[in-house]
View 1 (cartoon, rainbow, N blue to C red):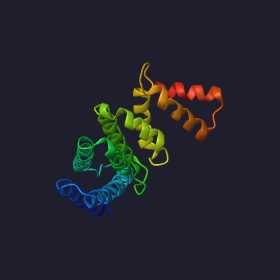
View 2: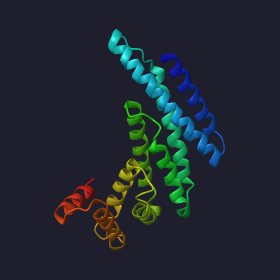
View 3: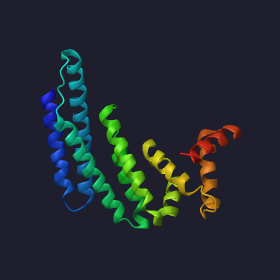
View 4: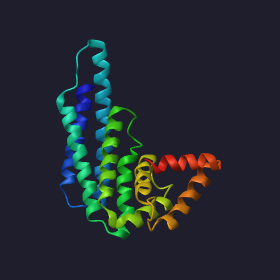
Length: 207
């Protein structure tokens, strides 16, 4: 099983690298997402199997190429998504963020070390990328407020940090227009008592 899983994730990694080097299209993006799901799932199987064998035999069955391959795929995915952001216009921003969301959602990938490592890497990459896109500040906050049911929880966490880093600063022009939307969302979906609500807002504001 170990060798089969290794062969499978290496093939998926090759597919992703090949598609990454091609000119962008919806078909290319779809293939890359399918290859990514396959890669991470097979890597998860390889990692968990290797860990089980390690516990039984006391010998490590993981080779350095596993970490190296994961690092390479993560870098390719980050570059692919960053390129989308670089060439994105204001009216394309929602579609661009949906691409990041698709990569972060990973419904088909089992919970575990591999999934957590990948999600942590990509979510941090998105957070860093948003800091450079100040021209999208107002549009990003609007998208966050209006698309709560569109994005996965990891994506919402990243966008929440952005909103409260930029939208809650004293004197910010977005405060009066955006904050009521955020208040309405939290109160409607979570039904907080006012005191609990204030605590929640305070915590979020200091993320």
